[in-house]
Structure formats: C-alpha cells, structure tokens
Image (cartoon, rainbow, N blue to C red):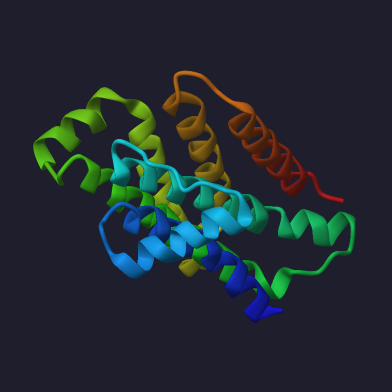
Length: 189
C-alpha cells in the first residue's frame, strides 16, 4: 500500500514536469507529449506564466493531499477504514507540494524579495498560508504542539477563501471537506 500511495502522490509531479517541458523545444519530449495528446485525446495547457501555473498545480496537489491526510482519523473513527499508518507519508507529500507552491510562486515573481515582501504585507491571505505552512512543518515533530494543526487547517481555509477573487467548485468542496473534517476530529465519539 505504501508504494501505491507514493506512486499516486508523485503523479502531480510528473504532470508539472510535462507542463514545464512542453514548449521548450526538446524533440523527444515534444514527440512524447504529442503522442500522448493524440492517443489519449487530452491537451497539455499552454499558460502565459508557466511558473505561476505550476504554483497553482502544486497548491492544488498540496490541498487534496492535505484533505486526504486530515480525513484519515475521521475515516478510521467513524467508518473503520484504516489508513493511519500512512498518515504521515501523505502529510509529508502535502507539505512537500506546499513548499513547491511557495517556490514556484516566488520564482514566478523572479525571487524579488522587495516585491514579495510588498505582496506579503498587502495581502493577508499570504501570511495565513505561510503561517499554515510553518505550523504544518513544525507541529508534527513537537508532540506538545500537535493541536496547532487545527489552527493550521483554519489558516489554510482562510488562505483559500481570501486568495481567489471568485471561488469555483473545487475551492468550495475543499473548504467544505476541511471544515467537516475539522468538526469530526473535534467531536469526540
């Protein structure tokens, strides 16, 4: 089961690599992507800002892996579906994709510390996301801080709700699942 989870968690990384390499002029890569587009009837997106698009892909991967990791305990408690041994593995992949989200976001703004600092103080959802990432990175290692993960989930919800001008179905479902998972974890059975 561990290898299946690792394989499934690395699929978004492969997709990010395909999006990044598409249009770079690498012959074998373009031929492989063209074959895949023709064979499986899909198209690789051509975003204007490739790094920002990769940041969005990494953020969605981190979000859904976080939701899965956060729902493992309620599924075990209420449905007796046991993925508890793999919770840290899935959470580790979620944190990894969240770091990739930050790196791609900073790279899309040319790692300009002054501009990123201005963005950070102008938009509070960036501070909420950074706070959540710090808590998710440190809290699992310090046993006494484990309850801070609930605050980090609330910060992720704030980051999602304030980070987009319009919310689409993906964000509404994600916020609903995180809120419901938080409620189920706080309710003692």
